[in-house]
Length: 323
Image (cartoon, helix red, strand yellow):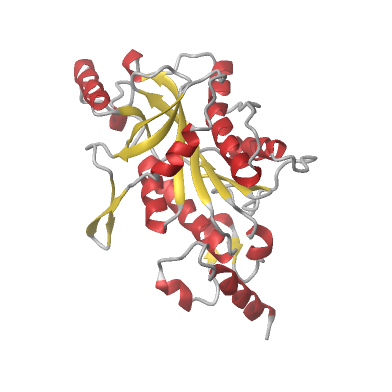
């Protein structure tokens, strides 16, 4: 038996655990090897169980630099050796970044659902081939608030599209497909429990609107294109808020829908950088923005520590210099 065959058998054995991530695509069983192209990893060339078999939590965020800082932060929180920069296991490609800090993966997903969906699917396959068990996924990021104080952390108890429907709509082979986006309420509550009365920020739950873009999809007036008036925008924002929408961003719907489809516990935890009732642009000074962006990291790091070690929470902050 050659090395390739041994590795395939090993990965199949690890992934057969009832607590592991199951792949829903039967076509993958017929493949001798699987190239995870966008993160430059391969089942025949990389020992995925050895490299990633201990992963328990995967955290997704927009920028590679932000997720590298989060990897360093969570290394400190978990008491790991942090003598050098985190290793980027996707270093042979510039599309995404995959950093590892002990049992935590810190992954960049870019902007919007199309970018997110590519890396999400390859990470699902990665944790499957690696034989990871009881894995939890998080998206940690930023958002625009609706009637909430800037700097508030919103845990998404419900995610909806621009029509206020909890479905991720896509087209496959020319056919419309609707995937339900159902948030894991137990995990939502667990994250809420990670907020402390002594925190400098509030942690709340609410509905998150996932827009198709940053400008028109979020009702902004300052894009290159705009065919609505200010009063129309304000009326729309009021309607959203009356329907329980607390914040808006561009990835939550796809993220929660794919977690639900893959039967992976997942949650979205984002900080609000502004209250959209006060305007479209962000005018807060950069230093405060950097601090706000660490707040979801703090909440999720507390969850991770409690999941792994049942440690008491603290509020250590890692600052992010990227917007």
